[in-house]
Image (cartoon, rainbow, N blue to C red; front, side, top):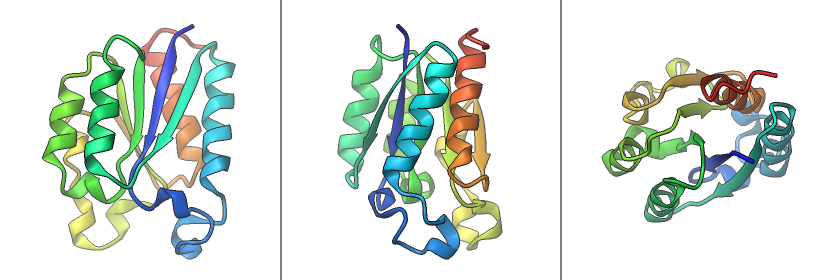
Length: 147
């Protein structure tokens, strides 16, 4: 079975308690359950990981080559700072979908630019955690697995 790697960056382990007025009350476990259910609906698997460390995210992206069919990534604050994550994503051959819980374009100006967007096949922002379901569905479509 083809799998989608769902990566979450720094502070997303605090979902549900960190700035709920921006990120909502749902938890990272809720995000992961949603992504896995959507992947299953499309005949795919999903492996979910979260790290507060840039290097660990890069290691997982590099390891995804030849193992995962697509990557859904919420790089969080690394969206705006990490050329290294962009470079790692550029070495991945499958679809990459960038997702943000909040609408980064309605927030502080420094959040309006994402390095990851330069590689992403799609960017979903401002849809809450439902954005992960949209991202998995888009990855499935790009993989030819519409259900």
